[in-house]
Image (cartoon, rainbow, N blue to C red; front, side, top):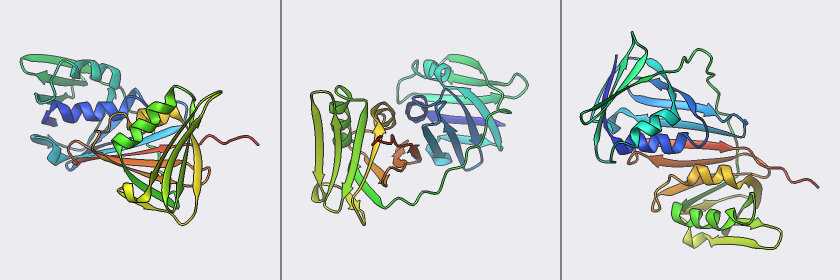
Length: 245
């Protein structure tokens, strides 16, 4: 059994944070939450998403797995406005997800989850942590996209920096500690990342929301923020690009 009723904006949040990395995903459904964990096809990034049952207007389910084609699901959800109620129901006999938006009913075939792995989230001990407004972060990333394909992130005890360098131009966004929500690091740390991946991770965050970034030296970064009006949480891991000597 799986029957839920939820505002479309919760499902749109779910789609926005997942679809840039992976198309076919396995949702793990329990009585308390809906979760997924997946690695992108290039094995550069991982997403861990959890949305609690209280994000839903109605929530009746047993433990089960649903394999979803996110492109197909996104095309259906574009038919709903953000505040519209959406009913979802799993038809086990037909292996379909029944999606009702107003008077419209769409039955979507589900993907077999048998071959879908359950990747483990590595335990990273990263010395640097910053909490920054999404609007500040997005400004630096957008400015960098036009000049380079990689982005250097640096944390010092007194500042946080995004830096990109192209053939002729550079972008430098440096935010002092007193203008950040939080900053803590025991040392200067720096890593280089793909701008495309990093941009896809943060593009769905609302401008006034907070983004937490954990950083080390040439280590993966961990990026975290809330979704679904703080009733859901997203954690991304992104592998670094190692600079050749």
